[in-house]
Image (cartoon, rainbow, N blue to C red):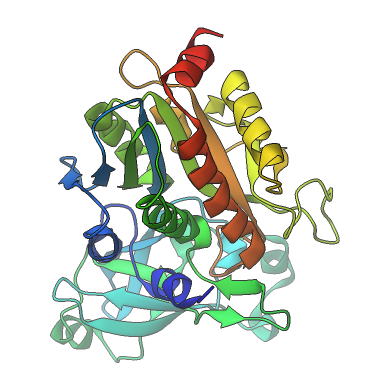
Length: 352
């Protein structure tokens, strides 16, 4: 499999409320595979294939964690508001991209004090996000404004996509949740020539990182019978981890997250499909943090939903790490779910 799609998606920039680059990419990729492409009123994209049978919504959020310019100081530094769940300790001394309204991009770096000048008391403190600033290498506020940078502009992490020593290990920004967008795209492409009894909706949602907002509006639009939220989950196969969810062992079915108790019968049906097709999977949970399933399962009169998470190390930082085989297995799993489900199975899930 070519990693070109993954590289392109990872390197696009899109924070909550500013997902247009990803939406345009998804539209281009699925134009020839959809019967209809629609949008909710806050920017989610809904690619539909088929009109007969249960409505299966495969949702992935297009936004990444980032920042918004909130102030330009007289010295030419940028103050920012966080968009999404940042821990300040991973923010310092990192490269970022500021994108203007006319799509000009400027690189900058988040400022930090060298250890040489930190007091003993400062060394003990966690830096507050409100104290974070960006240095774009200009002398004053007037120089910033001449570049066209304004309050409200998008700020995103900067890192290049990389295949590591083992080329199945992929390093990049915004895997949360561009990898889910890639799964939705590739699954819909593979299903074009497959016979199934469902209406498929591949949905790119907006503003997940600030409250799963696009999932709510898009679900009200689609009115799905089954909801699959394709996202990342935390791989804890690091030295300080519990080793319960590992890279390379398949996508994880989340039994629980901060906004959803994964639907039990839906999970059991998916496990049957995974076993039948010899697709690796894991079971996992998130103690806090919600996915789009949190809004999907509450849409209309209720929609059995579950989060399928691709294990990822170091999420909610400038960079994260995934495994290509987990990505491929997740595509296969989504394809086999859509092929296997029909009205009888959906009724069994709903009535169980």
